Length: 129
Image (cartoon, rainbow, N blue to C red):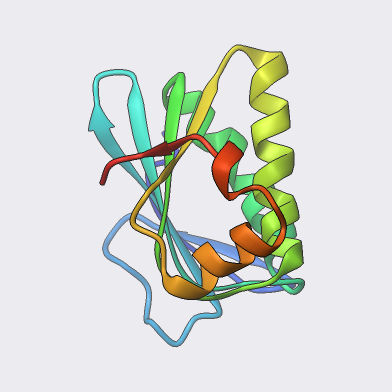
């Protein structure tokens, strides 16, 4: 099982099933059960060039838990084009592996603006909550 908290830096990842890791981490990712067949991947911190590849590595672990993953970006402080590319790559991959990736519609203003500027806001599979 891969449920738990992940502290991601540009050089390593630590799994802690005890509790959330400190908020001073550059990126915190939690994989949580949501509903039958669904897990929620909660991302907090900065999703940028330094740690977007690690998010890309963690998302397949969420698919080991369920066929549907809801990506919750409500706790991100910053996202750049590298973070956006990681999300778009994950969406493309789900189209070929029969899984489903949805994005929580509760987006910080900066993330929503990035999606709009990139021209993908209307094409993202957003879900309530």
